[in-house]
Length: 471
Image (cartoon, rainbow, N blue to C red; front, side):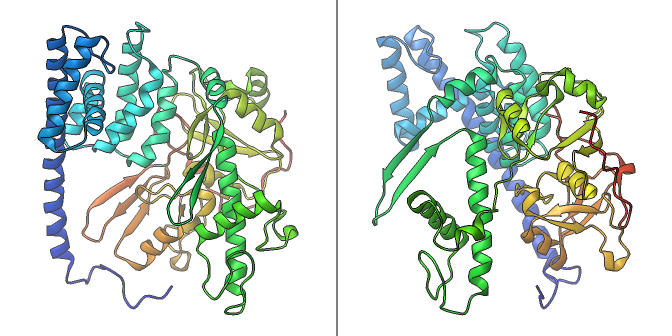
């Protein structure tokens, strides 16, 4: 893409004005978060007053006629005062109680402006698996431990990135094992039809996460192939459902494929044989403890000592049985060896070693390395931090995954990036503000994972041994 000039480059006359506006925005955001935190505190106080009036413990679900009436009276007045629905106020009461009572450190961090309301919601939602003191006296100590580690991630990640991190952190302190919860949840799988306006309807499938992610990624891979074919076709030629002079958007192609595959068994947009080879790819991180001590011993490294779960990339924890089934069916899979104490990735081995550097970087990065972006590494470009044309080496210490949008941003705007030896990226905005993105890694207890510089593989280096691990 050729742009006439670098957007907000060092010579831009608007940088000073932009910097001043961003400084004002930062101060306003701080005041908003402090006020929002104070609002939640008052909602929690009001809830406690209702509880005292009823002479009963309302908790989240009022019990008894007097408790119910006291709660409804207060809820109605807050709704009238704030001009909101009572249902909305009820959700706010729940959030305020959970945050101020169960996560005091998260609340104080929120009030200090270091995390947002969305961060607190992610932390609370993920923490529901920990349970409550009423059912388990040890739940309080487990929640404190979870709060400590999840806050470290919350202060450096966006809410969207925090969600899978919080889920796998909370899983280590869960009241009920994920295997049991998964079986119970799997029994509720279903397909739901919801009629909508303008001749449309929603077909919603509630499925196990691995299958759902696999279906979506296969549809995406097939739609990209069709999109390229449509782009190369003569204007107005088009083929398949909804074809015409106007080219379809990616979402439209995905929806048409979904319809064709279910109604016709084969998509009409392209010949079935053209898409037969398109398969879904999902990234699953499986600790040695899930596979069993025999596998770990044969690989020459110790099984994990902690209860770290298997994780589906972009989603969160999955049951050990699901992970073991995936391993049994996979034709090729990577083994990641890391330091138990630091979480440092030491090596990546494979049954059929190839493109060692790309595999290492996919394990290290997992997603686009721009701030807040969650696009999977499998859908990103490998970008030279220092351009190859300027002498930048093709090594793992000079390469990182960037999605096409942020790849373009790096090369055609005033955003600049440097890479540390451990894979951490330091971004500098056009106004000179600094931001850090650390490799997500595979250790659930931390997002701060260091990678061994010695694994940098220069371009043209001989491939690793073709011998598979001794399994």
